[in-house]
Amino acid sequence: MRSNVRNLSTYDITRYRRLILRRVLAILHYMKDIDINVIKQRAKAFDYLFDAVVVTDLQGIIIDWNTSSEKLYGYSKEEAIGQHVNVLHVPDDSEHITAEVISAVEKFGKWSGEVRMLHKDGHIGWIESMCVPFFDEHEQMVGALGINRDITDRKNESERLKYLAHYDHLTDIPNRYLLLDRLTHLIAQSERNQSTFALLYIDLDKFKTINDTKGHAFGDQVLKEVALRIKQSIRNSDTVARIGGDEFVVLLEKTSNKNNVSKMIETLTTSLSRVFIVNAEELKISCSIGVALYPDEGNTTDSLLAAADKAMYKIKYKGHDEQDI
Image (cartoon, rainbow, N blue to C red):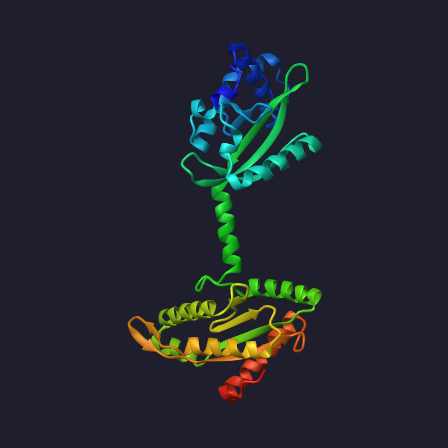
């Protein structure tokens, strides 16, 4: 790919770097009271800027970059120059990034955003990036300047906190907060499409006795296995969430046939009645399942949960053989 790049003379390189550094300093708010002589003296600072600076020509070919770019992307300057800038992007992202950058530069004179980056060794990270065009002394656009900062750790921490806010830390299934969010969206969707769905409220029978006699660590292992069995019993489009100690809720989307709901309850009951083996000890449990159908038995999150909860307690205290949908 090196053949696609015109040979730059020492004069060209010096001119480019002067233009580039001037642009970088302006972006970083260091241009106040700095004359051209100071900029020339600081030209060597290009390689020591904290941010990774990637310079491309009008065809997107890398024509220069600094030491921080080598550290960020893993390529030496010799390896990078002559390659298309897309080599730094995750392949699936290249097309939409290019379109977004061109559109923003045309409208606003610059683009900034957070995008995925592709390291030389193949691992994927995240960068905070700004792209601006730069011009020669005749105000003709000669290329683009990308200023990039690694934010991978920040993004990972953000995703971790987001996960903790939406998922149960013990069972790794949605928690009450995420359930309510999905239920709200499902109600709105069902209202638009005039479709129905079922909400199942599952409570483990006498689970407190297990915790009291076997200990909470033992009980936690049972809960993890319960969550796994429920998840394996439902469709990928459905949702299972843990909303309390031993309480789970299942959303069965687009379920208009009551027989299908009855079959799902039977499937769940059979799955949860199989022997549990925890710490080499066998255990059998049972559960009570209440049902609420949208919109017949509720058309809000609160009314559906209350109806299913009430039906669950009716089953628990009057006997599982009195299941009524």
